[in-house]
Amino acid sequence: MKPARRLFSGAGRLSGGKPRRLSGGLVIAVVAVLGLFGSLRSAWAIDAGMPNPPASPTVVKCAIIILDVVDIDDVNESFVAEIALLAEWDDPRLAFDAAEEGVDRKIYQGNFQFAEVFTGWWPQLILVNEVGPPDPNAVKIEVYPDGHVRYMDQHNAVLETPMDLRDYPFDSQKLQAELVPFGDNTNDVVLEVHEIYANATDDFVRRNSSVNVAGWVLQNVTFATDETFLNEATKDRRISRLVATIHLQRRSWQLVWQMLFPLLVIVSMIWSIFWVDIDSLADRLNVAFVGVLTIVAYQFVVIDNMPRMSYLTLTDVILLISFVTMSLTIPQSLVIYGLVRRGEEQRAQRIDHVSRWAFPLSYIVLLAVVVGWYASS
Image 1 (tube, rainbow, N blue to C red):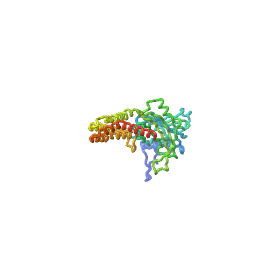
Image 2 (image 1 turned 30 degrees about the vertical axis):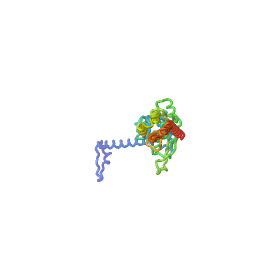
Image 3 (image 1 turned 90 degrees about the vertical axis):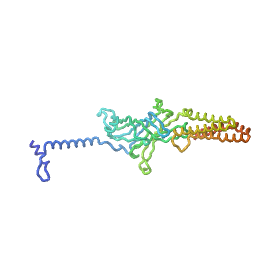
Image 4 (image 1 turned 90 degrees about the horizontal axis):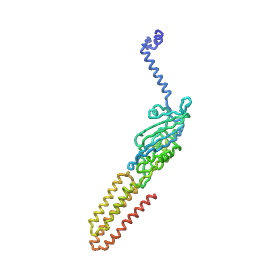
């Protein structure tokens, strides 16, 4: 023990020059702290991570596979989809000797391994039109001996996208999902379409009919890449973007039978006033007002199921034509009653006879013109 005390006797010297010996417990504590600090420095040196992309720019091949379309909200112009996000890139810094490691690839799966164990670089890919935080179900990264990295992420996403409802209910929609590398401009990361998975959604839809959401038919998904910027002040920081467009066709006939067909029946029933006695003004007006109020109720039903738009849809125009046609029966009845009171019954009868075919014919012609115009535009 004496050599030990001599060894540490100089470590306790104060500014006054008088040596001060350290106790054995304090020596052990100091050695433990120094050892812990050294081990932390070694751990930091090993697991420092790779914060920068491996190349300038790093090419990341991406694809979005639509596994299911859960819901489409016409009013809020949004849709809910279950998607699988795939991305691949090369990072030579992660290369390893497969024979030495004893594996042909390294796998990091689950939130913990992805966030805590994997220390390499990866592009932080986000859907810019996604509403709220993503709801991840699974995440996985595979690293191959040559440094090739494959990223897979499956989650449910609520996406906002503008809809063109001019042809409603005979419309088709192109819903978009916009993918960008968060925080990386085009000098750091460039997104490209992964051609191997470009048709994966189409193949999946053909094998699984349950992918289609009620009332819609999922036709296909197309991909395109371009560049964008966050705002006018950041035009010098352009960002690579991949846009997946989901093409859907609405199943229209259910809406036709539930909404438009009853509307045509109601309009045709209003024309029964042309067979009511020409001097029964009260009966004719009662039938006409019931028809007009029914059209107003239909408009409220349609408005509740449509977003607030600055244009008229095909359904809006059909409702407007029906409303005007039914409203014209009121002045027609008033004119007929006025002629009867003046003793011109024969003239009133002729007008009623002409109205029996003029009103339906005009209504049908207007509907045909409107439908043809919307179909051609």
